[in-house]
Image (cartoon, rainbow, N blue to C red; front, side):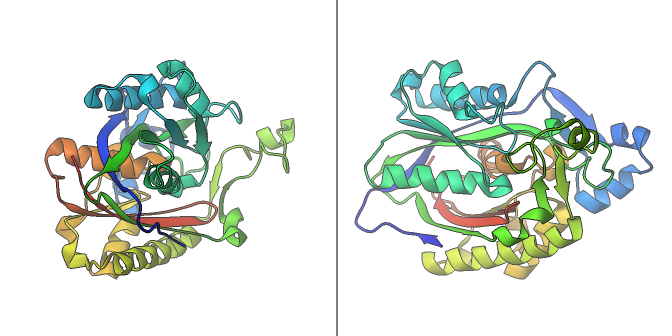
Amino acid sequence: MLVEFENMRHVAITAVGAHLPEEVVDNAWFVERYDTTDEWIRARSGIRFRRKLPDNEATSDLAVRAAKEILETRGLKPTDLDMIIIATVSMDHIYPSTGNLVQAKLGATGVPSYDVLAACTGFIYALVQGYSMVRCGMYDKVMVLGAEAMSRITNFDDRSTCFLFGDAAAGFLLEPSDEPGIVKLYLGSDGSKGDILCQKAGGSKYPATEERIRNKEHFLYMEGREVFKHAVRRMAQASDEVLERSGWTTDDVDLFFAHQANVRIVDSTVKHLKLDVSKNYATIETVGNTTSASIPYGMYAAYKEGRLKKGDKVLITAFGGGFTWGSGTIIWSI
């Protein structure tokens, strides 16, 4: 589904923020505990390091630090915000939402807040919602964050997935603009494939029981080979769709930010798109798969590095559990 609004306000990204926990977990940690090697992990995923939040913190704490950077950069008070949207699969609680907790910790009294759960595509889904609110004139300042404490829902007995994930938060402030910022956004999903990448227990179908906890059904579950095939096809398809609707080609794209699932998925997507590899901005080597935080963190890192400049044309795409997928074209406004 393409998200379109005619004869309405342009929407731009006006500030960015991010936070990584201090603790760095390198591949040696896994080598010491499992029958594996650094070479095997790097060849399979492209990951060397990932971050882990302290035991006394939660996803909302990561999000608050990213949110504070956004506010400070823009010179705003928390109460200046009109909406806070958090994309996450590792929420502090089922409810209250992580968005509610971030709102309270920021002191954004009265500002509406909520979560979006669309797995690794969650940030693009949240971006669509924030964009829509600003585009139609409902709100002027919407903060959209991806925040994940994946170390809390990773099964460290599953050798095939335990090394993939890291903790992080990152996001944007969206505001109306005189010039185009967010150009087009595209979303898709296929719930019939939901059992291939999921968190089985903890909801109303499989409430937490001693047996389910013992079987580790409350942790992330993934059939890697099936996910790989669907991820490459869907991210390439979504990218092609949004580029066509934007009137762009891959030659027009200055930087490409794919969800950092693993290096093989990203490289295969780049190849399918026939995109110049120099345009692919990757962060997976240093932070791992941060799920809904991976695209905003990549854009944050590229901007801070000086790779992402005002006027640059950006293509984003993601695929995640659900299945969900999405893409977007953006003209960088900062």
